[in-house]
Amino acid sequence: MEVLLGSPRGFCAGVVRAIDVVDSCLRRYGPPVYVKHQIVHNPHVVKDLERRGAITVEMVEEVPEGSLVVFSAHGSPPDDFVKAKARNLQVIDAVCPLVTRVHNEAKKYHREGRKVVLVGHKGHQEVRGTMGQVEMTLIDDGSETVLPDWNADEKVAVLTQTTLSVGDTANAIQSIKDKFPGAVVRNDICYATTNRQDAVTQMAGKVDLVLVIGADNSSNCNRLREVAESLGVPAYLINGPEEIDRSWMVGMERVGITSGASTPEVLVESVIQSLKPDKVTMVAGVEEDVTFSLPKELR
Ligand code: SF4
Image (cartoon, rainbow, N blue to C red; front, side, top):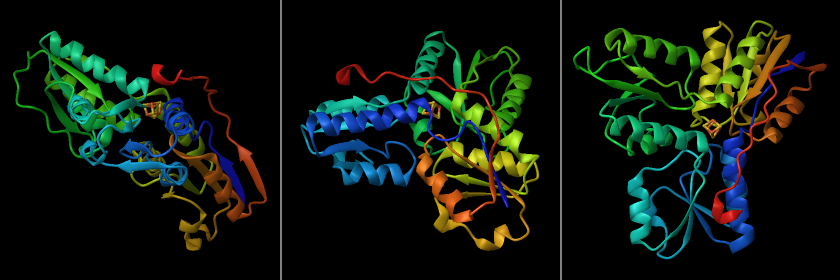
């Protein structure tokens, strides 16, 4: 069996930065370091930091008064900062700068008097953070596009979650533009999401099966699996080798492997090792050179 390895795959600049933030806090201040929401959507990463003294909580109210807390890469609503201030917490925000850009766009268009629409996944942490910035309407990209009942000449601004499917989002945006021709449309899907989906698209025509390594609550991992499936290739999202069902592999000569933006490379390596392929071939893709600096408190 041959393994075709997608590229780029794995950690993006926002994930590297968020993990570095918790790592720096643990080194500089010592444990415990509270983290609101999983720092990135990967249990391996979360457990590794927890072993070193990070404590993951879901609500600001769970952090003891006066403690240090890191807010996750997905972004947080302003309400969480207000609650943190009331509890006298020291907040270090590990939000990805590309998510902050979406927050700033939302505020700008709201100030300009536009109705803000966000295309995204209901309930996802990034969507919660963005929805909290200003009043806005969510269009769930996971279901059939249901548009708000506004006049066609309404001034509308459309933003998107950063980790959506490039294809599905284009369809949702087209429906919005058809109904509101004057809509300003920002495509906020980030470079890492786009590049990893392009890599799967390239690979899909060459393999019998795609394994996406990553967590089932990771938006961009799920989109990678869907992209492969939409191209007619069976695809599975797995956390690691222990989740491989050997019956998937029967008769498979070429297996594509890739991973989402929050997946450590060590998990990809362990999956490859467990498959014991005769050959591993890298599918060349775009080179990424994006980096983000740490928050000013840690520089
Ligand atoms: S997937 Fe994109 S938006 Fe999310 S952390 Fe990575 S670079 Fe930032």
